Length: 613
Image 1 (cartoon, one colour):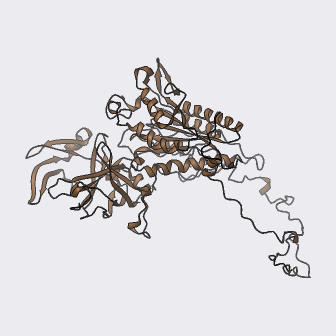
Image 2 (image 1 turned 180 degrees about the horizontal axis):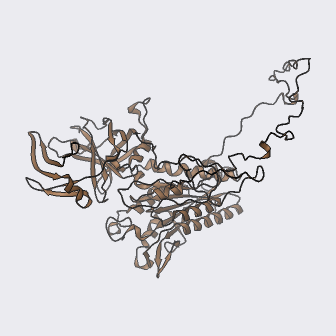
Image 3 (image 1 turned 120 degrees about the vertical axis):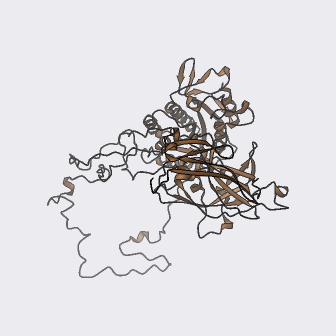
């Protein structure tokens, strides 16, 4: 027998009551038999009735999460629903998505807080290996209950998030008052089919301890690469197996260091390639930086007696002052002008310092008449599953009031962008659909080239699942063609706006399950489209591994990024966070595009002016 790990484990289930713990059943398992079973899972009939299942997993140290939550104005069905007659004793539970993805497993339960609708729960320290298997984007479901002595706990609502989502929503520090927590990043508790609001939850603390990953919806980043455009590296291959941790964005390259040959001529940097993909250097063997960052061993740095750098000429700048001493002090003019330091021309004596104007803002461009255009593209690939089967991403119950994941993402993220659209008319495309046996990677959805508002997109989307559309879902999945289509559309709108003496900027919102075939190919397309007045917002739906999408997030050209990935599962329970994250990068990229081309905002125009072409 092993002295550390016992060969047998006994499990017992009890019913906790006011009169004590009542046994409900028990079973004993041989560890070796469980490990030999399929999926390391084995069930046994319990003494007392029923079946007990045991699953054994290898424990890996992943660090811990230090978490503290606070409820705000919770609602309860006890006491007329508002705690008028009696106040509940709330506690919360954290559930993680099971490996099969079909249900939720309880991971943590807090202690109840007595008699309050605004509970401040005790800090909890939770092992990340147990909580999310070290995957910071793994979906979690947090639900609050009103404690009942008889075990009939009342559901007070819940929300879905992830460890990264909790860290992103953290808004409290040791210098702040708990009662003054900012509600801008609060999660909304919802319950039932109608998603009735039951209060809010703010994250007071969400600190990752004992791990190198530092938070917000991203994997560990490699060390800063040189600012150049190397040939694209192969992105990590997606692994759909939920038990394997997400791979880094770019695979590690182990190449022995070989000093480069001296450059043939000084100050002759090599031109950048057509595409930039960040690639970390080999461990303990740093690659030499390129000519942009590393001075080449050229004649300019060799101490030759004839070189201008090392043969200082006798100039007046470095000649000692004559014996007469430094210039005499010049008193200010009698009119009270500021003191003029020696060497400054007297003509500048009355000139005052004028600070440079502040950089332009997103609002300044929009108010100055910049036309904002929203285009939408949706993933119709077969990897989304049969839209007729419940649980798949395109499924909606009888196509009634219940929205599927694509429709909810379209409404929540699309509405944020659409409110800035000048004309409220949006081109709507699909990709990875098959028509008459031919796969199309960019096709018009609905009978019209442009639809009116978000409601028009919703209607055109549903029409694609009718027999009249003639479309069937297919593979492979690629966003290359819709990005090219959107870039052409953005340039065309910009040319039309130029005749109207105004500006134009387009945002392409792509909604996808993230299972793209070739991320290197997509990266090249994003790089090539970077010269268009456009940003891309890619909304990931479902619980797939989105490592490849974050790889695209890092595509850079001349210091400008245009691709922005949003994990909808992490953000969908927090509308304020969706708006903040969506517009933050788009606003920055719009300003960066126009300022890099030397284009300033126009004069303010009336908000009710609509430009027509």
